[in-house]
Length: 234
Image 1 (spheres, one colour):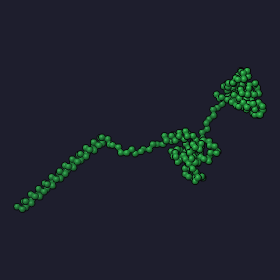
Image 2 (cartoon, helix red, strand yellow):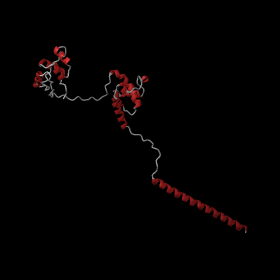
Image 3 (tube, one colour):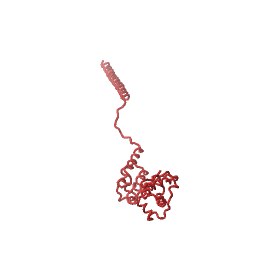
Image 4 (cartoon, one colour):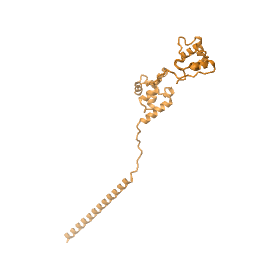
């Protein structure tokens, strides 16, 4: 339930014309300034506005008005309205940027592109209230004012808050896949090292046996050559 009645100024006009409530009581009920209520009573304000009966809409009762008229210090209590208003739907779209700040958006885009390259175009659009075409032109240096653009923090320019910027940066960091960094050489498992050592020992033993066989073969050949030579001399 709202703290102010529907159509406060029209309600104030009706209360001034149809009740003996004080200006302060009417001002407190309609959330207006007492001087504005006095101006309505004097005919200097709300000219041409038709008064709206708060009793017919269920925002005030006749008994509540009578209590206020009997006690100038009494403050009227707003009743539950019989008129149901639809909830205002939040429009989705780019952030509204004041006209005086719009020429600074390309500088903010350039700052975001350089310092937070992980941000998507849709996130930049939410932060500074721009279009994808403008972001592409700033990134590709095809913007009409690209030669004079200077990177400027959008928070400093007042285009977004630091909390909003941090939120979008953290969100982009979570969505970006983590890079696998080289962690340096690691030790092999014990099974691998033990197996390699066993293979090396077998290979060394085989090589040694092969060498021993080669040496024996050489000596045997030399003996044969020596025996043949003696037989020829005799």
